[in-house]
Amino acid sequence: MSIVAFIGTLIAIPQILKRLPADYFDEHVHRPWMPGHSPLVRALTFFLKNLLGVVFLLAGIAMLFLPGQGLLTMLIGVSLIDFPGKRKLERKIICLPGVLKVINGLREKYGKPPLSVQC
Image (cartoon, rainbow, N blue to C red; front, side, top):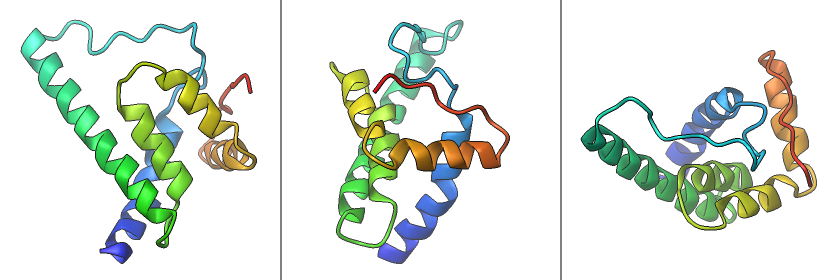
């Protein structure tokens, strides 16, 4: 299980992080959830997104003790889950020493602009 989770995060995390908009952590940018789709589709995808976020968060917590990218996996999980204070917690995680540097290094590798964060 640990090996599968480790390999899965090695594949999924770079794909997710390179797709984040550079201003993702800017709290002044409003991002509506799936505008133009029916309420049923929006509700279903909202539920699935949050469920996937919980899975990533739990896997990240486990990876703090097992092989894997625990902090980055937790950051992805938190970014998928919707709850009050989410933006503040995301900024707290991304401002940990080395986390932003690793993420921006990965984004640079894929030709993406660095994330803009107010730490």
